[in-house]
Each structure stands twice: as structure tokens, then as C-alpha cells.
Image 1: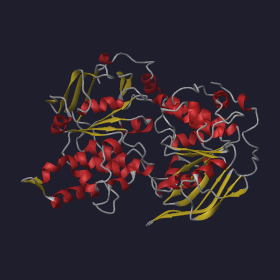
Image 2: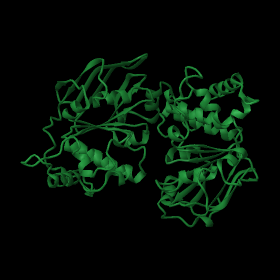
Image 3: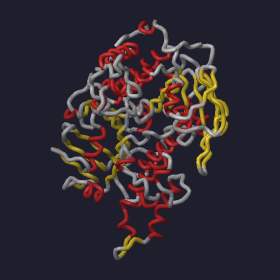
Image 4: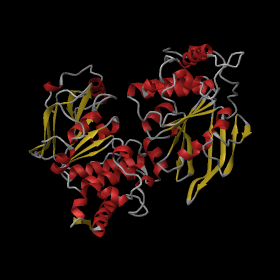
Length: 522
């Protein structure tokens, strides 16, 4: 891959007047049955600049970019692209206007080759009207040369990692002569190294004069990559300011309408001496001789790059994934046989990374999702006492400030943060001793994150041992009492909260300063 911008000396994909806004949206409104999603929203993108769009879940970001993509049509307002009035009524209209939206769920066909996906909307043909495969492969290679990234045009798209699939989407944008590229939470599944690569590609796009709209929850990324940031709240435009005029506090305040005095509250006292979870020599298909302890009232944070084994360790600890060797002890009792039923019986639960697939039952109401694991508490003679069940759930709705119209609301209709609170309620109703949380704030806005951080601190303060798997460095350093680093399924470092630094953690995560796990007693 090229390390400079020399390859962009050629003309941009279309004649771009940098004095004219690439996009102007004025007074955009959108209403769904019973919901005002957007009201009088303005947004202006400049050519060759990165414009961040931020806001809590439900702020209107997704609705706005779907209007840009032609998925929705606005009910009010106007749109101009490079000074021309336009009406976007379909995704095809959006592409024709030079807009390419790279959604969080990448829209590629796994079984097609890279080249076939790039030219999916229109394959070049020869003079006989048949697909010109040679030109497709040549054009594909040229596109990757322009963005400075090498992918085999003949590779099956489904075999590529998420970061390379994103590059294919970006190449599609250039193939369509896009002058506006929208990226929706583009780093949610990327490693730090892949994020750095993506930022390099974004800067190369802006060097071509392309306007980039960057939608993200991550403050550190926005401060690094954006020139300007627009904040939406409750479907309304709150602010548009150069990023240099913002601090973390001011940006958070615009997003949630209040100040967060401490993003990582720490009300709990010192951990107890009692060991709530002991793992010795744990090995699975992907883990090798992992040992550690977690004490009551302690948060032990695990960090590792993608593929390091964080999620595999979380699932092995609670009995979901089989183990080949090693032992697990919960509050002094052996977890034998090794399965989830025994784990739950001993008082250990898992807050899964993928709450929608592995945790929630979207069509069921809030109260049934929360009580699912503890129905036996409310049953007598084979029947569930619905009143007792709902009363117990209501206690947790109030304790965790779960925002729901009622206990009967389908859980799929709640925000990500409130869904996470419902899952926490499910496990705590069992009277846990250990809770394993895997990426607890993935896909959650900053306001809900602060509440989840507070809940984790509260759980530890109530005497639970919290084992936290995270790829987010700020929450790792902000919440953990001890940090454990994984690399290729092995523990490569263990350090106290006071010893932990970003540099030490990343060095251990890439294996440059690690030793075999059996040399550490965590």
C-alpha cells in the first residue's frame, strides 16, 4: 500500500468546485406512525472534508442517512448536491447523484468475487453486449490502486475480513463516481490497526475532493478524523461546529443535553479478599493454558485484538463453549460438569457481545426477557405467578432506569442501552456471584454508556466479581481494577490499574512484550 498521497495527483472522479458545498440539506423532516424522527434538520458537507454526525441512539442519525441513501423519502425540506436541487426517491437515485452509503451491515454478496461486487449495479460490456470480465478486473485493480489498497479482484468477498469488505464498498463508491461517501459506524468490528488503515483511506478520499460523512459514537475517533461535527438530539439539529471548538465534555453535553461529570464513576470500595472466580489452566480449541482469579467486588478487564480469544474465554468460563483442559471454580465450588446449567446454578452469568442474537428474544415483552432465567422463582404447581413476576421485573426497571413505555413493550423496540439493562436485570434476578460482560457498550451511545459504566461499578460495589471483555481502551482503563491481555489465546500480560498504560497493553496485545500464560499468576 502507498504511504503518501502522490497517487491522487490525477483528476478527481468528477469536476468538483470546492467553493460549493457537496451537500446541503435544509429543514429535513420525517415522521413515522406515532414518531417524529426528524424535525427541521440542516446538514452541510464541504468537498474534501470529513464531517462527523453524532447523537444518542434514537437521535435521528440513521433516518437522516437513509434519506440520503434513498431508503426513506423526507416529508419536508430540500436537498442540493454541488449547488443543484435534487430529489432522491430511491437508492438508485442516490447512486446517480454521487452518494455512496457504507452501512454498518455491509451490503455485499459473499459468494461473488470482489470485482463482481464492485460492479454489481452495472457490469462493463464489450461491443457484443457481453460482460467484459477483463475490463472488470483491470478497472477493479485501478480502483484499489487509487485508494492505495491491494485486494485480489478475484477473491471471494465472503472470505475477506470486515476491514477489507469495507474497502470493497469504498471502491464501489469510486466506481460510481461518488462525490459523497457516508460511513455508518465503520469501526464497530475493526481492530486498532484496521481503524488506522481506514483513517488513511478516508484521508485519501478527501484528497480526491470527496466529502465524507462519518457517523460514530466514538469520541476519540471523531476528534482524530473529523473536521466538523454535527450533533442531533431527539430528531433535531443541536449544533454544527469545527471539531477544534469542542472538548469531550462539550460534545457529550450537546449529544445528551446534560453534563456527565465523570464518565467512569467509581463509588465502590476496595475488593474483598474472597475469590469469587478461579480459572486454572483453561484450554479450548482457541485458548491455551489461561489462568486467573477474580475477587468479590473487583472488575477484571480483558483486552486483546480481534481473534485474541476474548469472546471464546467469556463463553468457556460460563459453560457455553467446551473446554479441553483446566478447571473453573465459582465461590469455592467446582464447575463440574462443565455446562451452562451448572454455571448458572453456581451463580455465574454472561452478558453476551451479540445481545440480539444470543441474548434477547426481540418479539417478547420486556418483563418476559428479564425474567426468562428465573421463572422457577415465580412458579408454583406448574404455573407462573404473573403478578409476582412483573413486580420483580418492575423493581429492576426502576433500579436501572430502563426507559420503556411499559413492561409489555417488545424488547426489540428499546434502545441498545436499555436492551443491555434488560439483560443485566435477567442475570441479577438470579442472585449472581460472578458476571461476565462481553463488549458491554458495543453499539451504545455515550449517554447510555455512562449509565452502563455506573451499573458495572454498582455491581462490583454490591460484591459481584465482574469479568469484562472489551476492545475499548478508555473503558478498559477507566473501569478495571486489574487488566489482563490476551494474544492468540494466551495471557501475555497482567497488571494493576495503577500499572496499566495504553502502550503496555498494546505491546502485550501484539505479542511484543509477552510471555507464556503459565508464567503469570493473574
